[in-house]
Length: 220
Length: 389
Image (cartoon, chains in turn purple, blue):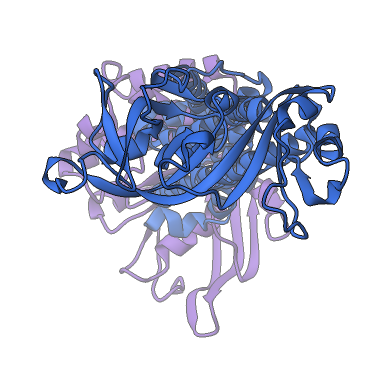
């Protein structure tokens, strides 16, 4: 399997005292579901932020899609996020004043994909996820499971290669958790890499691989 | 292309939450409305007021006794003939200040039958009221009433005496001497202070127990002649000793108008400036509040691949749209308001077509600048922290 992301000795320090991550070596392969587990405060979200180029490593080397990221300008990082990365959050982060299909189409907006094409793909994705009848619904009217499926559609639209999910099932019941994990695994089978930070055994047990973080490190 | 994309995205955002558009737009509309209304009223009012000044003040010359003069009879009896020989003199009128007197609507010894008021009294010739541009209810001096002197009451004095109309014979007592009220002076083009007092014929002043303190001549000239008449009048009146008379002409009309218009313009522009500043602050704070409330959205957009400049462009576009539509609404309302006020006052509205365009332009620029400040703040949001919020 080819490699989409690689971390070598990555550390993240906040100020001089707080060490959020230290010496992380990690590879994410194409089409795999990788679970990152660990107690609260172990550095899972920080690791996801660095993987997602929302934060930068204080030390070490992070390579995404074969390109070292440490010296990239902010605009280049934004471009890589738009091209390669999708995000799924526990809180969904749907835009409440926009309807379902608008929210999904927004996921490809910064890839400069023409509007018509964005909406065509958004429609296709929502139909695949069983939300074809909820296109014009407003987010506050959606259930938790529906909201998270909309968020997943928004994350993968536009041919994203790496999906980063931060506690994606943290607000869902077990039935919706199962549905969301199935969806993520299906996209992994299509070649998208999925990294999930989670506490939930229902999730990490179904991952292809699990990495456990303790105090910002991966215990040997 | 990115500019159009930002405008499109900002439009969708505003349409999705129209309260933002309406709130900030109303404030902008108010500011720009005041700006356009003030500008239009400024032009209209300046025109009206200057015209009014041109009619009366710019055609008036006052001739008074100079400080060096000691003669009590410094005005010759044929003053009118002498002055009318000068080219540009329409008419002239001697006015004698007869000092303050007590005017009563009740006969002496019967204060219970009326009111007594202390007021200033002026003496004039029969042509005096016309020369002063008086509008009178009743009749002029020209109709004597036997041996009893006649009087014209200023409208404010008449009101104090509770004499509101002239029905039949109306008598008053000046310093205890009877006089017949011929009319009530409703308005005056010159010497409007006479509305607070009364006017009698100078020839009657002795029989009314009144004595002149000072005399002066008001000369009415044709437009533009006031300055030259002021130079010639003392010599025309007293060729033997012109230094006895001193003529006062109004400032040059065009300079006076410019000064006056400039003062009005500055005052109204100051008001407009404050209104626009308020509008800018409201747009700025409204957009800043909106950015703060949408911190998570800003973080999400960064996660989806937005660059800092993309966020700045969206926020600036939102402010620009609000500024444009607020300005358009304000300019329209301001114009309608100014035209309505002008019409109500009987003025012909003078609309500068550039004023509404300038208003919309200023408003759009203010929207852009005010929201750019909030946009810069949005561009600096840490996406990871924003998504945790």
